Amino acid sequence: MAYTLMINGERHDVDVDGDMPLLWVVRDHLKFTGTKFGCGLAQCGACTMQVDGVATRTCVLTVASAVGKNITTIEGLASPAGNALQQAWVELQVPQCGYCQSGQIMSAAALLESNANPSDAEIDAAMSGNICRCGTYSRIKAGIKLAAKDMKNVGGAA
Image 1 (cartoon, one colour):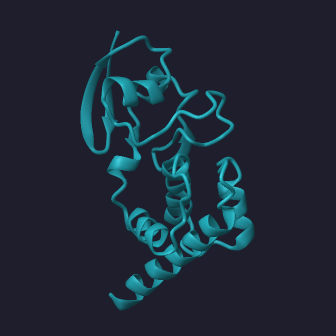
Image 2 (cartoon, helix red, strand yellow; image 1 turned 45 degrees about the vertical axis):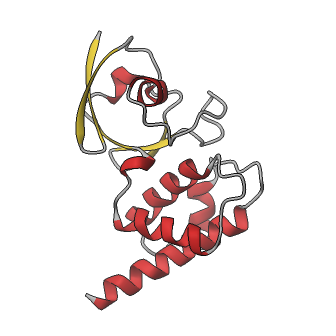
């Protein structure tokens, strides 16, 4: 069956089974490979994209459920929060292997877009579904804090 999806601000028509996970449509059919497959059970966060601005595990979200929603992948993340996070990730050398990092950034961006100055507890809550097998959690938290600070400084200069 044919479905129309809005991904990264662009319309994409795909002819797939409606029960196919959005992750596979995005990776295999549309060739946006920045989002990773981890567990297939929505437990690790590697597959995180933003769906209508909410960090969403796309390994269990069907393509039929995604129709009519605005989907953002790591390739399309161009928000102030996304840009600040990507700069902080580089500055603090957050990733080790990097496999989970697109999901980490997508969850962190959704957090900062809804809460520009999160507390440690709010960061922990927002990031709790994202697993980093390398254990870079302290650098991830530091990156989120630096991005929030940088966004505040940019906003204060305007």
